[in-house]
Length: 489
Image 1 (cartoon, rainbow, N blue to C red):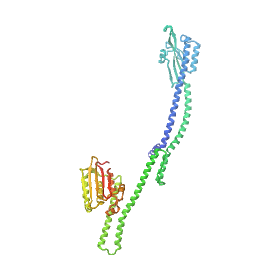
Image 2: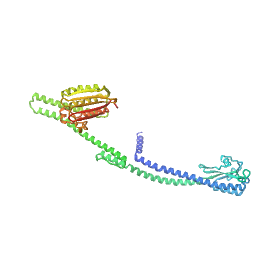
Image 3: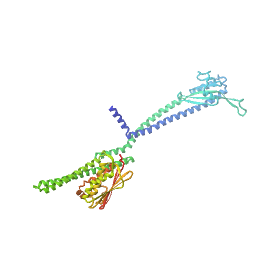
Image 4: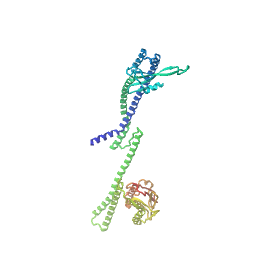
C-alpha cells in the first residue's frame, strides 16, 4: 500500500513540474490543430468530391432522360440503344439505374432484380412533383439521385408556352467507392505527415520547455549556493519579470536574515556582557574580602550589601530575559479576560508611587471615561508598569509623570508623559531594541537592563496594538499606547 501511494505521489510530483506542463501545452497546441486540420481537409474533400460526382451524374442522367422520351422508352422498353446507354451509365458509375413510370412500376432495372415491381418512396413521389433529390449515404458508400423524365404536353399548355409533364423517374445509385479510396489514400499520407510533425513538435517542445525553465533553475542554483554558504551576495536572474520578482523577494529575505543574524549576534554579545558584569563585580568584592585578613564588620556588611545588589541586578536581567523570550514565542498563550483598565492603571500607579516619592516625582492619573477591554491582564500590567517606571526613573528632581486614559468605540489610548531627560530623535528607531540605552551611564546608576521597552512593545503587539513615542531632549517624553477594546484572535 505504501509503495502504491509513493508511486502515485511520484507521478503527481512529475506532473507538477513547470517544464513538463510547458512541454504538454506546446504538444497539445501543436498536435490538436494538425488533427483538426487533417479532418477538416478530408471532410472538405469528401463534400467537394460528392458534389462534383453528383453534378456530373445529374448532367448525364438529364441527357439520358431526353433520350428516353425521344425513343419512347416508357412505352416500349425494348430499345437496344437505350438499354445499352443505361448499362453503360450503370457500369460507368458502378451503380444501378431504375426507370419508373407514372404507375410507379419499375420498367427497367440495370441489376435485373426489381423489374416489374412497384416502387413507392418519398424520393420518387417528390420527383414526380418536379423536385429532383440527391442523397449521399457515406455508411453504405453510394449517392442516390432522382431525375424526372419530362414530356411536353400541348393540351395542358398554350401555343406560346407548352407545359412539361413528369411521365417517369430515373432512380439512380452512384457508387462513392472511388471517393472513399481517395480519402483513404489522403488519410494515410496525412497521417504520415502528422507523425513527422508530431515528432518535430515533441523535439521542439522538449527544447523550448527546458529553455523556458532554465532561468528558474538558475534561481534555484543561486539560492542553494547561498544556503550552502558559498556566497552571501545578492543574486540576480533578470530573464523574466517573474524571476526578477522571485529574486527581489529572496534578496529582501536575505537582507532581513542578515539583519536578524546581526541582531542575534549582538543580542548574544549584549546578554553575555550584561550577565558577566554583575558576576565580575561580585567576584571583585568577594576577592577583596578573601584577600583581607581581619575585615571590620562595617566593611564586611558594606561589601555584602554590594554583592546582594549585584545579585538582585543579575536576577532582574534574567527575569526580563525570560519574559522577553516567552513573548517572542508565537505560540505563547494569551490569557484574555475583560479587564477594568481604570482600576488596573490605578493599581499599577499605587505600586509605583513609593519609588516616585523617593525621587520626589509626582505621579498623576487622569481618566476621561471608564474603560473596559479584552486584554491579557498580566502582559498589559507588565507593559504599563515598564512605561511608568521608566518615566519615574529617567525623570528630573521635583519632576512629574502624567498618565492619561481615553477610549473611542474601537480602541483605548494610554498616554504616559513625563518631565524627564528626554530621548534624542536619532534614537527613536532604536529604543525598542534589546539592551539599547539612551543614557548608558544613567541606566547603570538606576539599574536598568535595557529590556523594558522591548518587553513592552512585544506585549502591545501581541494585543494587536501600537506604541508611539514623542520626545524633546531635556524636556520630557510621551509614549502613546493604542489597544483594541476587543481582542482580535
